[in-house]
Image 1 (tube, protein in one colour):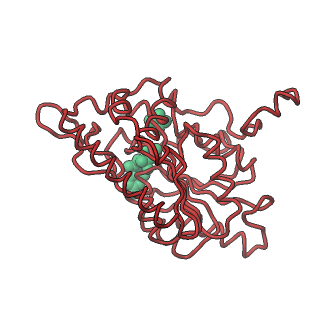
Image 2: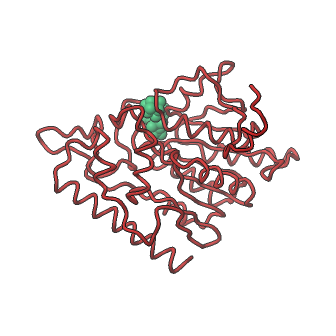
Image 3: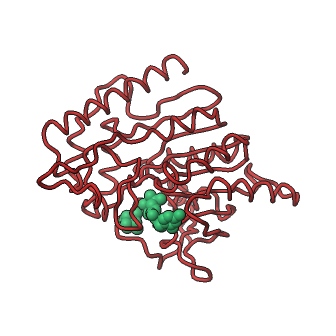
Length: 311
Ligand SMILES: Cc1ncc(C[n+]2csc(CCOP(=O)(O)OP(=O)(O)O)c2C)c(N)n1
Ligand code: SF4
């Protein structure tokens, strides 16, 4: 379908679709939306690596895949190693990698496949300095195998192996700060992004395309099935995650931090506004909520300090 030129001019995102209908994501899936934006950003000029996760199923097997792009379905722990190999092979064969007219090598992995089992391969990819982009879409649990907790699951969340109930079996560990581990490698570029702010995400994807060296984006991607949230609340929840500073948006480039959202000069919204839209938090006591709220504000202060000192 071709849009009239005056309508097209008003769009803030590319009109062309490279993620086709007929994929198998649940209604309201943040991961599917994120993948669609990545495909829009790179206009079908990317090679994807997807390990075992929901996105493997969403994309589907060749020749029925929903992505208009070459796609490697790979083993759970290997995303960082596979994108390293693809980048090295393309260069050895004389292809242009990255830049407006080059090939984008993209790893697209869940939080389980990144923060837990894939951490070593991610570290190797960053340390060796490959010209590729690793995107961790963060739905804060192992969704594809039935909503088990990962190290990216927040304190107080229900999952099928942190079930809450009479005895207090909710997640007791804080969310692992994967982005801090990534930044410890001093990559060319690292950023957080959210499906609720597509223009910001698109700008970061473009940045990753033009910068030399490894890039990493942690994308907040609500999962209505695992978060026990209404399917039409995905964007609202993702927006509140940013506005409460639960998942602030920031960038790290050449040793410098820049906060994008929320404003460092204003009080973030109360965390409860974010929590109350999701059934996974319904077992939390008042004290649990206070504990998580304190953690969020402490992390937010730490980020603001970093942006002040290394801004
Ligand atoms: C070595 C290995 N262990 C376990 C699995 C089973 N497995 C497949 S997908 C998956 C969950 C993936 O979770 P995550 O990376 O968070 O992505 P999501 O499904 O949430 O999108 C697991 C445990 C596997 N494929 N390989
Ligand atoms: S379980 Fe969650 S992440 Fe997986 S397809 Fe459904 S909504 Fe998306």
